[in-house]
Image 1 (cartoon, rainbow, N blue to C red):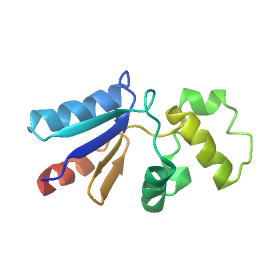
Image 2: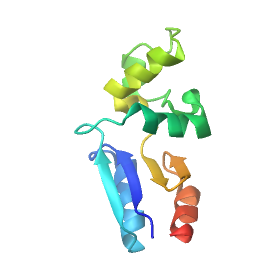
Image 3: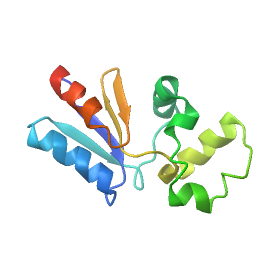
Length: 117
């Protein structure tokens, strides 16, 4: 049985919801607090392959607006570097179990992961 990995920020309401969802179903989780341990570039690329970089970005989030990214054009490599330094730019939580990944508050995605474990 694979362990569900939740990448998020502990104070985030959506991250807590994902954590609660899997714990209620007695599914083993590994919570990675992105403030403490940032995601590796390879891990970010796994989500980018599935959702595209723009799909991962939380364009309505405070961190995105405060960074002025609505008005700045950046290359994909520049955005990847920025995401590694500032995980709040992402739609959190990022949930992964094996090859199945989902982003944000996605209960349907979580249910499919729960059914597969």
